[in-house]
Image: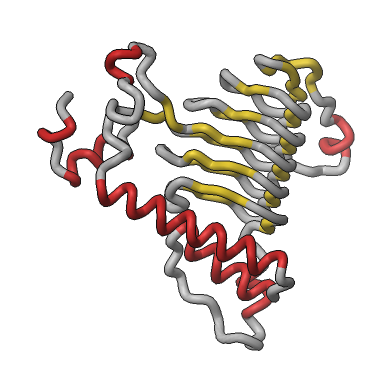
Length: 223
């Protein structure tokens, strides 16, 4: 594949489809610069003690969410702000708009999202500090990889609802983690994880299956 033979639209299509593409294309480089600046603006505002609304507005800049918020001080404002992720410190995305987070997601400091392909995190999931989500990949053939000149690719990452990822967890390209999963600190998740288990290690493996009888007795759904 010759970089010069790809127009920008085809190159972008390939990226979004998880096919080989060139990350150094000018439009993609510009988007990463935009996202880097937006991430930095959120970080500064967070440490300056900005109010929740301002933090949400800056988050929406990162992920390119143009959904309007209710007017400040309106009865609907608090409810509208509540679902957006809580971000506690420095955070980094490549593009931002490739990340889809459910209501009530919490992101601790120094998390990194290489969102070449989509990274989805379900509602109420807690992400510990220094976690990394790598949806981008490179060819194994070193001559095709060709340092900064060669093509890249990607595979989507999906994290289910009600998960808890401890500090320094790494999630690799193409991984799906089911609902209610706990990932031990320092784990590297290289393959799919079933619902309601605890995994740990490098590579992460199941070390415990959760007993949910108490929830069933209380009439709560585990579906």
